[in-house]
Length: 127
Figure 1 (cartoon, rainbow, N blue to C red):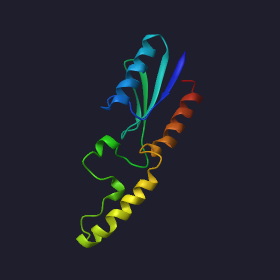
Figure 2: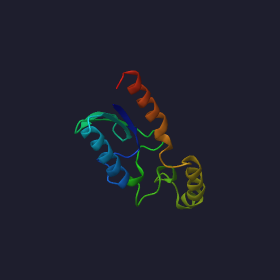
Figure 3: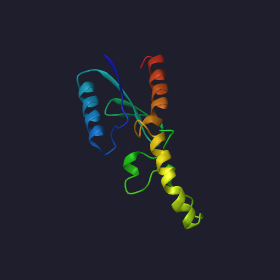
């Protein structure tokens, strides 16, 4: 059977979802299924990991994944370095609020459109 897994996180990401989907894909492959995965990555492209076809697509909303933002502010809330301190203070909170509205319902929404395109392309080619 041909199986297509569509998930935001996949190894080598270091989080529980990536570990889980990596194990599921590997188990399905060992059972004799042809497995392809569409996942998010900063570097788009296709590769094979232990017999599983991995198709990475970019997250066009934020080029940086959430785990890479830990300890920093989201890219939409960053203010240019040359701006005066008072301007930075006045802009910071409105920009945070705007970013919260844009990223709803979750951080991965910018990945959905490229993922759907990649999945459709795989379905058309018979993979």
